[in-house]
Length: 151
Ligand code: CO
Image 1 (cartoon, rainbow, N blue to C red):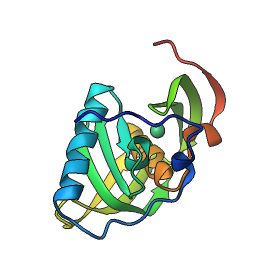
Image 2 (tube, rainbow, N blue to C red):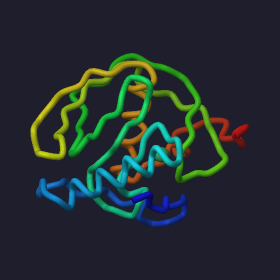
Image 3 (cartoon, rainbow, N blue to C red):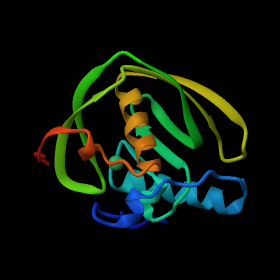
Image 4 (spheres, protein in one colour):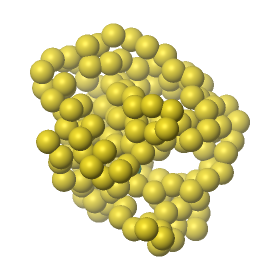
């Protein structure tokens, strides 16, 4: 089911999310809804608090692939890249954000199995943006030159 996206100003976007401890039907249905929602809104990613759920769950939808990240944590972050970002919770805006150029994360899938992922360039940027949401951080906190986006 496509879910409504919480907009900036709503306090849920500022809460630190809780770790997922139950890997069952509820988590699967949350992830299914997040996939439908991120695709419907043509987003590069979506974090659970953006649909009002205070859990450490993220989906990423980029050219490199589609990823479901449960309880993601950084192992390391390297380098630097400067680029534009937008957010489905900050409609009609974009801003310039400095991010690491390469990251390694650990995460779980919907079954609780553990994986690691090394990501660079835009995928690394998308991961950093979405993981920030899990700690109540919105890209506009870090961006310079927040402006109206063209589309
Ligand atoms: Co966002």
